[in-house]
Length: 145
Image 1 (tube, rainbow, N blue to C red):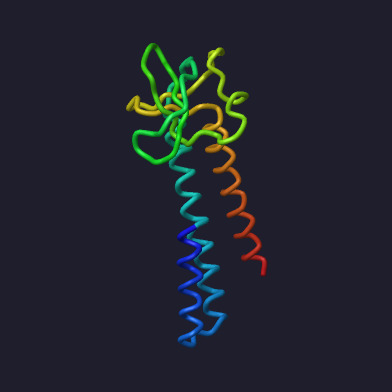
Image 2: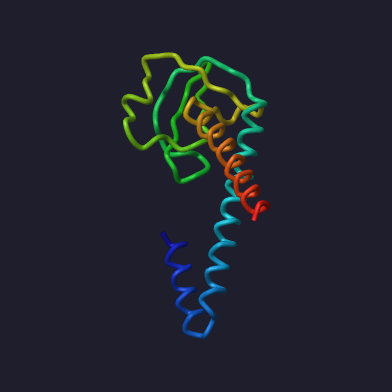
């Protein structure tokens, strides 16, 4: 939210000092391209890291604050050791999505600090494929014009 407010304030200041609106539109487009590229890079890094994990059977333990971020994450127990999920927990239908009575498959990272649950795997895979597909479509659209 602070980011959006800062962008609005900067845009208003630019208009007051006489910057042409077309330059602001170009800057906004470049910001969108930069954010898209950053998300593509981040999702690709997580997807590559996912490829070097090992599959384990785990049981959901709890949802609590992550040790390294301000978000809540799901914790899973593998062989008596509790590991946090790499992505934040899903904020809705927690009782349906995270069930402690069933064993589930998770992917443990090499350094054994985080796990990828089925939601993290779906996020990495779908996000990476969607970003690459969108980038390819935008590139082809740009080339054909």
